[in-house]
Length: 438
Image (cartoon, rainbow, N blue to C red; front, top):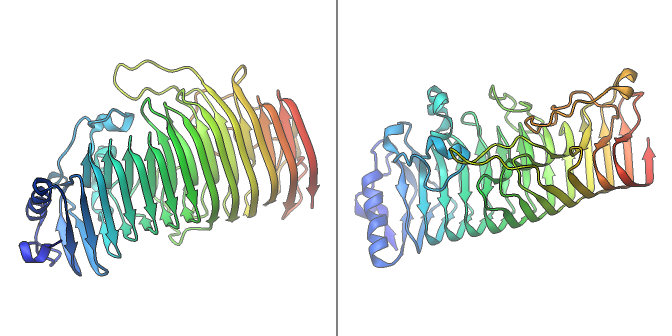
């Protein structure tokens, strides 16, 4: 264990410590591993490249402070692992590639000072993340506070065995401010995390040809100006074996939204967004035991055909399939007049979708003219709660689904709405039971 202060690292928040910290990491690499201990203080740094068998321990009161100067970060361009956003390259405070057995722990803080990059909006994905790990194995981030990244807070790409536990995430430093991004990873646990973000809170992506699979998300508190839990939008490889259990979704403590954020509302755009639009599949996804307060739309499921490629010259993938998706035991209070929707495309396989044991309260106030409204396919549109406009039902609207189960659902209205609670079009094998309107 190495106390960084005893080796020339300055905790004054002003001295740039990049070279000094990197030297200690390199010594750990040569020794086969080690622990860097950060006592209380503020440690200003640019980008650091981590190694295998390394632990960073941030004591309570210690803050790893990201520099506000882009030149202080190594610019990996293009990204060493192909994905669409990576064509602009990546920068990160903590960067790891092809490593194993990395631990970031303690009760300290990593603060990216994201507001300092507002003048670099055009750089977009090249703004620094707090953490970017790619093709790594056995990663654990536990107990720390993550604050104000320049882009997505933490992005794990093609990693195996990732554990994110007991994290406190606040990401309102700028635009594109996600809380957690799991991308083409396998065997992931996210547990007991508190996230408040300007963009998506917990986002599973599949921005390469590899699916994101075997993911367990439990016992988290999410606050978001966008989506609380989402698969996509990057969805080339697909999503399989996803379990989300026991989340509480409430309005953000930050009431002002950043311009350009989808939804851009302190209540959150959508609680649960299950989407695949770039050729990847959706399979065996279970969302259960969720409490939502004032989230505008409790859920939507979308299988679409944006078909974005993940590398220059790539081949556009056709629409794949979505099957075996279950949403159950959802309690949603104070939802907007916008509608939950389940939407495939003609001729695609969005099948075996079950919505069960939910209690959903909506604002109401819709127009009777909407009941017969023709809804555009919007085949290649960006998947969002607003992509179809106002819908013919106030509760759930479904289209192009095979084997749809709607069971034991209670719908509540704050004000009258002439639209029905449910409407479906071009669906086959629809089973409905236990529907209540109050």
